[in-house]
Length: 459
Image: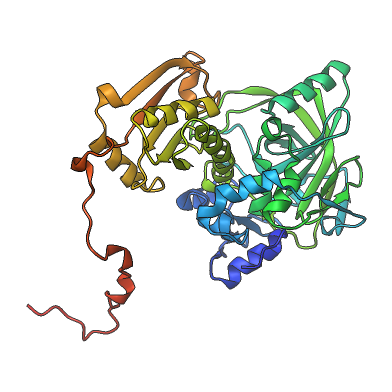
C-alpha cells in the first residue's frame, strides 16, 4: 500500500485491496448508522453511500485495527510503538502552502451544518446529536505553539456546537479567555488519515512536540498546511472538511449525557459554546466518523500511551520486551507487560513502574516472554497457571485514577491491582508443552476446500 496523507486516496486504496465494505442501502443518522458500526466494533472499513438525505458519503474504520493502522503508514503492526517513538524523536516540520485542497469549496455563515454533513445520534440516552471525529486546532495564548486534539462536540443547531476540553493546557487557556470575555479561535478538521489521528494523541505536555510534525514523521513526509479563510490558524491541506470559528468560554450550554469510551453514560456538563463562521472542503468530500467506543478511536490513544509505558518500565526493568493496553480496558485502564525475567521481583517492579507511568492505569498484568500479550486467552492462561493470589497479586487502594472511568466517581479515587503472572526462574514445572514443527505448519497446505458434491464422509 502506498503511504498517503489524503483520506480519500487511502479509502480508494482500501477499495482496490478489497478491504473496504460498502453499505449501499439508505441508513438513518438517528441511531441506525451507529447500530451498523457497533456490529463491527469500528474495526472494519465501511463506506456508507446513503445516510438519510445528506449529500456526502461517510467512511469509518480506516484505522480500526493495529494491522490497518500500521498498513496505512507502510509498516507492520509489530513496529507501531517503535515507529511512533521514532516520530516523536525525529519530527518533520510542516510545509506552508498558499492554496489547499481543503479549500476547493468555501461556504460562509449563516449556514446549518446539517445541510452538508450527517450529525449522528449515537446512544439511546444521549441528549442529542454529536460530532466526535473532528480534530480541533488552536494556538497557545502567545501564538507560539499549535495544539491539535480529537474533540467531542454537541450539536446545538445551525452553526453552533459545544466543545469538550479535557487537557490541562486547553483548560488553562479557556480560563484565560473566559476571565477576559474574549473568544478563542479554533478550526476543526475532518477526514484525516489514521497516522494524523495517532500523532494527535501524544502528550504535548510530556514530549513538548508539535503533533502535526510527529504525524508527518509517521508518514515519512512533510504535511502541507494552509491558512484559514476567516481566522488566524493553519490547517492541513489534505483535510476533507474544515470548520472555522470561535469558542466563547463564558457562554455555557449543558451537554450530556453521552456514551463514553467505556460504554457508560457520562455526566451532564456545562461546556463552552462555539460558533462557526466558515466551512471549507474538498470537492465531493468524504465525511469521516468514529464508532465512539471502538478501536479507531481507542487504538491511537492506547499506542501513544504504550510509548511512555514502555520507556518508564525500561528504566527499572531492563528486561521489558513489549507492552499492550487492551481494548477491553478502553485502551487505558489495563496494561499487559511482557518481560524477560532476570531476577525474582522483576514482575512486581514492572507493575509498579507501569502504574507510575500513567495515573489512568487500573490493572497491570506482567507475563513472561512465552506469552502473547495480544492474545487474551494466553494472558488469562498465564494468570490462572502462574499466580497465587496471596503472593502474586497486590492492591494499591485510593490512588489517582481516570475521571472518565465510572467507578472512580464512587470516591474520586481508584484502587489499582498488579498481577505478577511470571513463572519462577529456573522452575522446570512451568515449561510449556511443545509440538515439534508446529511453528512451520500452514493449515492452508493441509486443509482442502470442499469444492463439489463428490466430497463425502465414508464410514
